[in-house]
Length: 299
Ligand SMILES: Nc1ncnc2c1ncn2[C@@H]1O[C@H](COP(=O)(O)OP(=O)(O)OP(=O)(O)O)[C@@H](O)[C@H]1O
Ligand SMILES: [Mg+2]
Image (cartoon, rainbow, N blue to C red; front, top):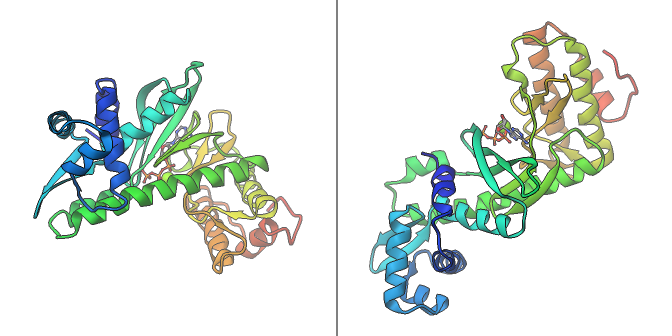
């Protein structure tokens, strides 16, 4: 079961006291590697007995982890961090219920969900370090690493949300940004599948042009470069329109490697259409187009 599934299942069972303890651990984690229970009791203003009860409950629910060194310390698991974000989004009237997973992969879990207005939304949990978690489990500074990954995942969500706002304001075809909390972003739900999954694409030239048109708009109007573009981050909708997803690693025009990253994005897309759709396009020509140095929209 993924941590988001753990979180979604246990979230409903959580009492305010549990959430309070999770929150205290979260805050204290910025100062302590492992949070001792005396600290948790003090900041939550719970008795030692209540604190012990809550900690053992949260531990059994897999929301926190206890580490035994010189003293027993506590840290959040991804599922605990998920619960804090879900709670905030529910309180902010963004999120009402979870549906099925849309994509569970290396660095993110994406879920189908419903807003209180019954609108379908997509919820993306950033999960940096999930792979290296397994590899570093035996190392001494495993916990410190984990805390750092939670923080990095929050940074990734903040950055992705910012990119979605920047480019959607300029009408680049991306999912509609709705909200962000901690390591989670909420966006408009899209029907369709990654370009890579489509066996047959009618009018590939038109679709390639639409992708390049959107790369151009992001670059010229928003000054934003995706920097991880490939057939896996372009969704083709049933109506044959595209959306570009997955923006946490974007850079701006001013980035020292901006031009190389833009060229790599364009190259990945051209390469895909060349391999799969027998469409040959000159990189130089396409780059001149996306940077605004040529007006030619057809290749
Ligand atoms: N707004 C959305 N609506 C519907 N499905 C989505 C949405 N955003 C993402 N997905 C689905 O979730 C998958 C993963 O999303 P995304 O590419 O943003 O994350 P990722 O960081 O690449 O994750 P991974 O490391 O698992 O590849 C997408 O390929 C897509 O199938
Ligand atoms: Mg992706």
